[in-house]
Length: 386
Image 1 (cartoon, helix red, strand yellow):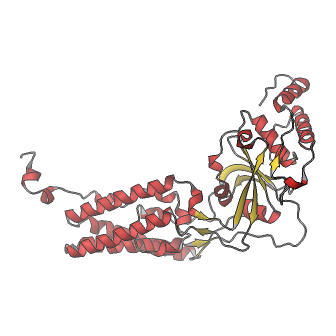
Image 2: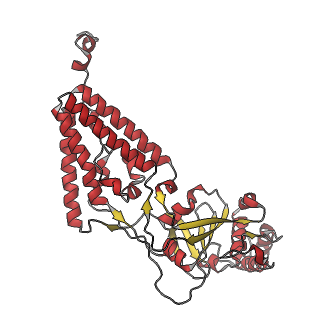
Image 3: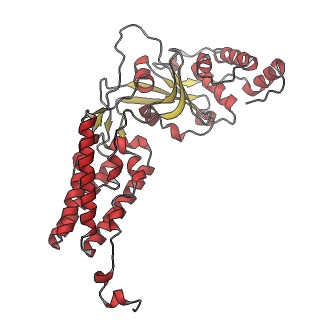
């Protein structure tokens, strides 16, 4: 047989694309990257093409938002957690911090009792509407070319996204403090695995909502049995949709392949964007508080220097002991005592004060590395400076 038989016999008569059905289930990683915020939007019910829909057809659903690795300590409240809540991490973009960097912000609640929402105008909405447009275009093209199997595939795989939306739609109302008793300041220090620190000046109410109260998801369909039934229906729609797609004519299969390739590329691009742009967290106002010297002074070369500047921002070291941020040795105990004394050694100008403290912190003239080295030599053998 001539190697050019598929050309001589007609391109579309011999060129096979049975593999196109697999394109419908590729791209699970990019879809799951923003799955929770995507299912928060009311647009999730729109029928559309969706890459890797099986990623949403799970036996069970997450009961809370995914936390991030960090150590969170209340400066005055004594609260402590081994992770940072998802929304708090997204709000401050903790992933953007470099090793040993120290930042400080003020967070205020501007809108009380405001629910957490997904941004209506954003990249996730754009890819969702792209899926809707592809679904409409493929349906029109299938009908125009009298391709029954492609028409069935379009209807089934488009309705599948609505079924997924029904089973995964949720809402999140942040837990607020109900007690009217006076509470201490809610200042929080977040220590990330890279040795960086985020100092947050806020009220106890904000600290409770963002950092210490659980982020529990409230699904529209609460009963697990009903959700499993919806997942079963979705699974059946997916299987029959892929079967119908495999039996569509080759020109329509090429159109389907192009649609899924473009959709997967779009979802990968959106997955690479910062999570912050997908969430509507306008009920919180974030204002940067600087160390003397501006952003250059936030960069540090050692953990000891970063810890010292975090102490300057809090003027307290109880949170260090609470979160086991420093080694439990005599040398470090003495260093922490001196660091706290030095941090409290200057007076603040009232005109520079904000709601939760000064707008700029001066760093006292003290070398934390030299001081630690001195205490390590005095208190014990074979200690190394961190």
